[in-house]
Image (cartoon, helix red, strand yellow):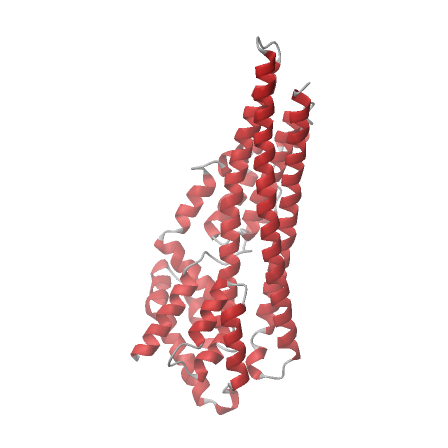
Length: 368
């Protein structure tokens, strides 16, 4: 193995290993029923209780989303367990709380064994049998094997399988991809303008000084799809972390505001008590408004990604270029995933707008 190949392999391993496991894989029992939200069964009679019920309902929906789509398998399994917990909303709140089940599952995902398995899963998801049969087969064998098998694949098996695939492609004139100037120009454009950071990195690597036509072909073969997968996983991890914190803060602010409103009754200094309650509900409204703004920005980012992958899928379908044939299905899958994220972001923005509206109504209510 020459030095340039070792460096290429190292960069690819870093790109593949930098995220979590492939999202969308749920336990076999994930289709079973989960306890209904406790608050939904007992409609609240007053404003604060209604807000708590709405927040609990959204929290449960958020955990269900994590169970289906969070990049880390450990988080997905833990989320399903929280949803099935007979304690209902209390279990969800505890799971989302700082230091709770969500944080513990993320910590488990950082362990070496979990990272190795996630690497193998990502290779299977991004390396097709048509372009990388040796790599795909080796990754699948590692997944069916032991933790030691998966560690060995990460350490050397992946690079060795890559070499075998490349040797076959270079020796097979009938399947050797022709890389032209237009292909390199297109990859250069991706390297500069693609909305995904990891896609840009993959494209830049394919055009690095000393890169060959084989490097460009491998960008189309798996580097592009890998970068796109990492960008999606990074987005999902980031918004999950941020929204979990926002929900924890919301629960605290609603509890504080509800207590402040209750304290108005029979207060010795009614004016001060009302002012305190107004300020507390304003804090809820401000928090909700900031959360809505954050989700609107996420919605725009997801929409840009969905449109980008839609255009790539269309180009792959229309192109007669052999290089582009590798990108058709991955591009369609990425478009579908980002469209889902766009819809989720819109739903989250609506929830936070509702929270802001309710808090503003409460602020008006306590003024008397």
